[in-house]
Amino acid sequence: MLPEVPITEELLRALPKTDLHCHLDGSLRLKTMLELAEEQKVKLPADTEDGLAKAMKIGQRHGSLEEYLKGFEITLSVLQTDAALYRTAYELALDAAAENVRVLEVRYSPVLHLSKGLKPTVVVEAVLEGLRKAEREAGIKAGVLVCGIRNMSPEISLRLAELSVAYKGRGVLGFDLAGAEHGNPAKDHQEAFQLILNNNVNCTVHAGEAYGPPSIAQALHYCGAHRIGHGVRLREDGDLLNYVNDHRIPIESCPSSNVQTGAVADIASHPFKFYLDFGIRVTVNTDNRLITNTTVTKELMILARQFNLTTTDLQNVLIAGFKSSFLTFHDRAQLIRRVTEEIDHTIGEFAARPPEGKLAAPQARAAARTARS
Image 1 (tube, rainbow, N blue to C red):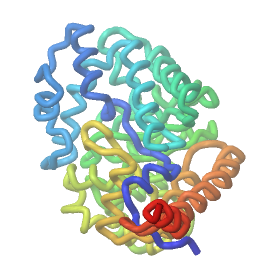
Image 2 (tube, rainbow, N blue to C red):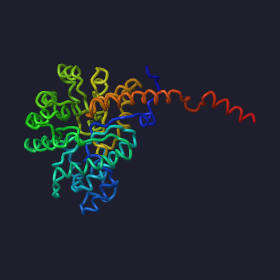
Image 3 (tube, rainbow, N blue to C red):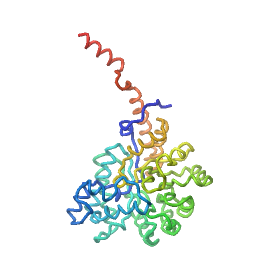
Image 4 (tube, rainbow, N blue to C red):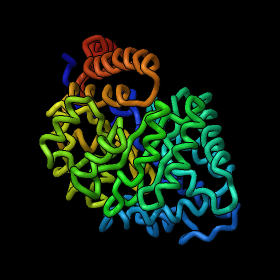
């Protein structure tokens, strides 16, 4: 049993974490956006960080997922060169490493970065190079998930699946299906996923965010998803819920994003704690660090306050992230052993601290001697 300690931002930052659901084009630095726009002669809706944040409704609630996704039109306008992709991937991994994220899976769709003539292969390689530089400098493990887009043609998804297969083992960890969920069923993209599965590539699908359990069922049974992105509506179907739990299919939970897109009314309504208590392998992720205005630390802090999480709850969530990553089994196993020991040690250190305003016994004795002298 872990000792119970107050879950603070300091503790959360000190603990090893993962971010398995993080969109590159939703996770830029505002300062970088402005600099890239100036370099590329791209007109943004504002020329200051504050103005840009307001124009993009950073961290605000939106009427729907489709409205939330409009912010990506602005970020994508400066992500059409290999230099921009390299820089933003590098900075994203550094930002994650700064809050002690050890495994980062960055997802994006290369087809959205071709408006100025880049080839899909160049897009992939630019991002991978940026991530590799961050790995060398910060020690973070970072890889890519290539995204098909629901509201684009299945043929485009197939081409992106082929790209994923070509870069398997070279930094691409898996394939995803993203985009507007309602009215764009995952089963339409089954051919792309069949190619992925035939080549033993990992895959995940955005499902159960803007549509109900049938979307999750399609992701699992038509696409063979190994993880589910968001999955907030899984709780509406008890049979499917048990299937997900029995097969240890991880849920990539993104709580603040789910509130902002209207997938849930508020954090109190989020199914995170229900999933955790039920035994679902639930992970905590950012979705979009810029557009949602968040970090993994911030997401965990919000959940800890709302649901009164214990240190054991926290450990279970953190370990679930490492178990659910698309690293190889042996890499995962080694990492899980190390981070489990580190989590125990870190929580133990915080438990050994004296209560705020009080000194530990040796410190108190030393202070008393100083006062007498």
